[in-house]
Length: 116
Image 1 (cartoon, rainbow, N blue to C red):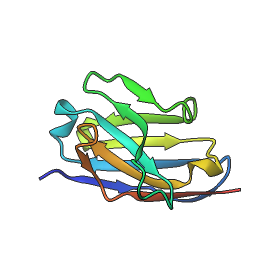
Image 2 (cartoon, rainbow, N blue to C red):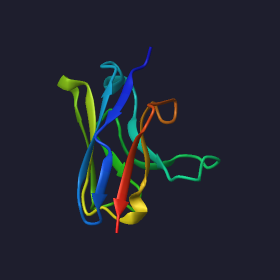
Image 3 (cartoon, rainbow, N blue to C red):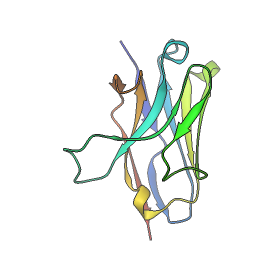
Image 4 (cartoon, rainbow, N blue to C red):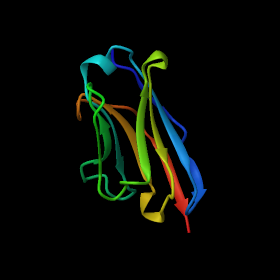
């Protein structure tokens, strides 16, 4: 059974920071691409948007909209993936999902709300 548990969401003013955490099954980090996706409210019919991903070899990718502001990282000893989000914008407001093996597995999500 795959474990993916997000935490760290909340409400913040524009320009602020949040750090999301994803506690995952330990074996995923050596087998799969891990990532963060998001979906804004009212977009249930749209596919989740890739925010950032980290590959088994440690390489990372970011959506253009978050480059320079968000940083993805992994602590294998803690079986945890992080997303440090700085300089948050109202447009970053969404439900954020931890994912494993591309879009193979998703957590339940954590809400991030950025107020102007």
